[in-house]
Length: 574
Ligand code: HC0
Image (tube, rainbow, N blue to C red; front, side, top):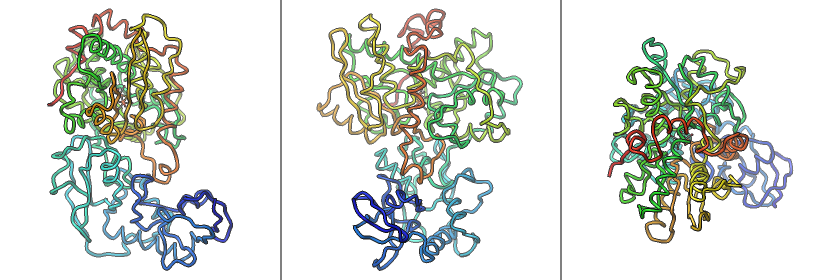
């Protein structure tokens, strides 16, 4: 450890800490703007400056390591004035329409301006840059007029997702974050993961908002409006209403959806169970009949698009299963429509997802089992929170209610889909029991749990070794796939999720500011909510879901049947 002084008081801090980290230990939150731990460590924005005795100028605390005997001052007039001036300069070229901004109330720039007493947002009036809003991609809107060029978005795109479709163009006053050759985002190989939106401190990046379309459907007396909620939504929606990260709000979420006016409130977890039956069947079929291996999961649409762009030679490895979101829509508009005696064209299927790529997925080819799109509108967790706010539902005081039957019934295997490794674990529970014909004693495949980027394990069942791997975050997917292609690694089954940590950390989840992200393991906290729900579930294996059994008995026949293929499987672009 090292001995330092902060604002005249002595502290002992670990060697290697930055001033920012050391101050955190002293209960001081130094404000930051561009800094994202391990992702964007460029010390560029100068908001986090502090005085260090003996230093010639103010230093960026996010990057500057502490040294033994260092004397740091975090709140001198010089420091506070510098931070305020920096903000005034940022505002001099910023779209200040805060009242109508989607991030109003949870904008990091707005909060800093308030905290640092910026009392005149017009302090520096002068030339402004003007940019056209880019709404060419299916999932998001880029408004550079609100961009502060912190580069968190381009860092996450490049380093975490190994895509790099956005970066700084031009220099000086006209520096702007955009695509190469000023292409529109929709023309690039962006995979719609939305990780850039999750880290944007302002309203420069946002999902395409479809809440008006959902309200219009709900108001249409001729439509049956059904909703499905993804596993990970329940683990994060509460954050939008101030609840601690990792609070499971499933019951309140269901009540809110019912009171918003949805005719049926269903659960994507049901279709996650269904996916497991189809995918476990596909795995065993490929293993037993010399099919293409490793089989790779296909439920994350950001990953699918990444595979199509960057690993087209591995498309035959992808499972042909539609994602649970799409399977859900397919079953709703065929089986359920028949059961209820309604025309699939009169159903509006809405999905609530932690994901922005799901907005892209609903428009993909070959996702229309009933001749109409399987899913009509996909909104993010954030959009649902906005809908709840808009109608004045007091989320925190709502009672807990349960999902509707029959597509609201699910198992613990379904809910863990929302965390990296969850699809693998759920599939293993079913595949191993199918292979051995015996009841599994231990349902916890802990080796594939946790937030490491790449996980590997080997399980023995019915005399054979099953080698599996799990990757989340596309730079990890790239590493894993390169090892598979070079022959360095040999697996039967791989789970890949586009977002680091899986869907719990999806690009559509409530944004947490960098001040939280830099010091809190959000992914683990949200994942815990799902694993706890699994552990407390009466049924924890997808093949034991009674309503899935009923669906096969009444309608689909067996996993992998002709009908199941027609409705629940898809194709990819080569
Ligand atoms: Fe996921 Fe899914 S688990 S991709 O992360 O498989 O978005 O939560 O809904 O479809 O079920 C997202 C989450 C889903 C799907 C499921 C899968």
